[in-house]
Length: 103
Image (cartoon, rainbow, N blue to C red; front, side, top):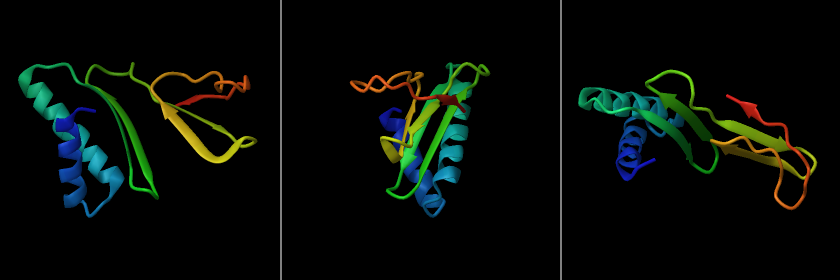
């Protein structure tokens, strides 16, 4: 995310009374519209958290091809989830494979 994207997101958060999902969706719409108008390719992974909730989105104006993956390991980190733009096959140092899911 660029500084400009972050500014748009913060503006949308204020306008949506802090609704992360709505602000994220509005940010994607705005960035996509601006890029379309300028004839610029649009691909964006967006993640935002407020300490209680998180919202993630991936967007590409050219269709599918941009992915976000999440992994969780109830044995070692029961309250944690990792979200990344690349598939995470192994935990560093532990050697245990996590099952990654694309969304």
